[in-house]
Image (cartoon, rainbow, N blue to C red; front, side, top):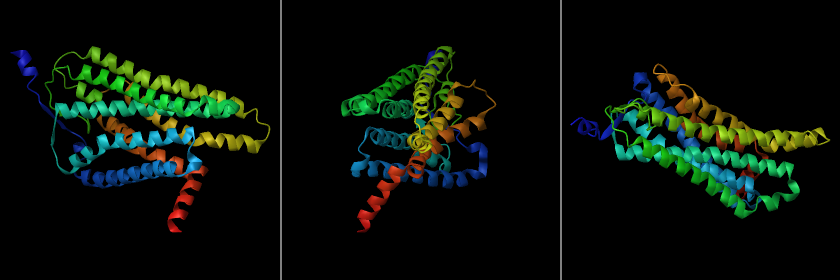
Amino acid sequence: MQRKNFTEVAEFIFLGFSILGNHQITLFVVFLTTYIFTLTGNIIVVTVICIDRHLHTPMYFFLSMLSSSEMVYTLVIIPRMLSDLIFYNQPISLGSCATQMFFFVTLATNNCFLLTVMGYDRYVAICKPLRYTVLMNKGVCARLVCGSFGTGLAMAVLHVTAMFNLPFCGTVVDHFFCDIYPVMKLSCIDTTINEIINYGVSSFVIIVPVVLVFTSYILIISSILKIPSAEGRKKTFATCASHLTVVVVHYGCAAIAYLKPKSENAIEKDLLLSVTYTIITPLLNPVVYSLRNKEVKDALRRAVGRNIS
């Protein structure tokens, strides 16, 4: 009889930003505007890379894959969040929640490893320039992208399978989407094993890429310092600046969100962190690569010039 009571929960309700009361309409406008800019920016980046032959290089291929992944990533979370800001207490079925969590984990992990792949690309370009076309040929690039996505799929299957085999008693998710820890808190039984899985996966997905990226940059910086001219050093490092900016923000937010000890009294802070890595970080990618990257800006000018003429 007790087990039957466990399985009665068939849907959840997101608490979301209800703690902010009357400010939810303001949040809706702000988040919708940000989301539109995010989609527009990433679409522009992907389109320009596709149509401009000057950007048909491994670096920009990976950037287009990252932008595409970010677009789907935001599509999984933000439309539902915007809807909940207007229409309160909309239920989400367990199946829909599991689907949202699956795509969230897949794409978040994919993004982490794509940034690692982009760091490796910069390492090969700067430290092994004569072998770059061999080491980063089309086959290698495709395998690196597939490896990133495959890792995301594996992590998602592990997470979702472990999570949705739990019996749930609670129905109110203290969040604005089906994130791992808020859903786990609704279980009727001890979740120690799930917490270990969560921490292990999070550590792997964050720490391994961080170590690989910063190892790449240590080797890159050592190579840059060997360049005799200051102008040459500046120009070479400029090719890495955009990537390094995105890496610091992306991994920084992810580490704080998933590797810090969980506190029951940090709801507002957790929401702010979640907003950062689900809304702000995806916007950062096209902004940084558009404003700080000369090749992308030149490609945009060429595209606009062709359309005008």
